[in-house]
Length: 133
Image (tube, rainbow, N blue to C red):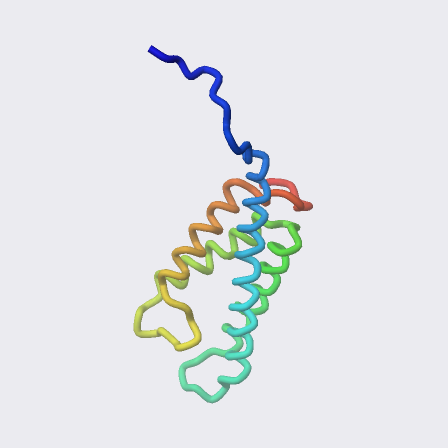
């Protein structure tokens, strides 16, 4: 019977775990920034559509810019991730008849929700200037 008490890892890359959270945080920030620019542009261009509140959509876009900049800069990342969690949950539970052509597929929101929950639970990773909640 063999005992593997002293197993040696061939490629020791556990020290790179904090950089994985950094990549995840930057990816969420870039995706949210692209979405917020698109939604803010759409809100300012759609002023004549009936039953459409462009000020609400513009507000979501502006707050999304703030959340994405906090994720990209590494300052208050868990609060930014918490906003992304709320935004993704709202997009997942919205009625299906209100799907506009500028909103991504629900699977996109589910993946963004899971990545944001990961950042919220584990923290910001490397190169962040915030304290955990």
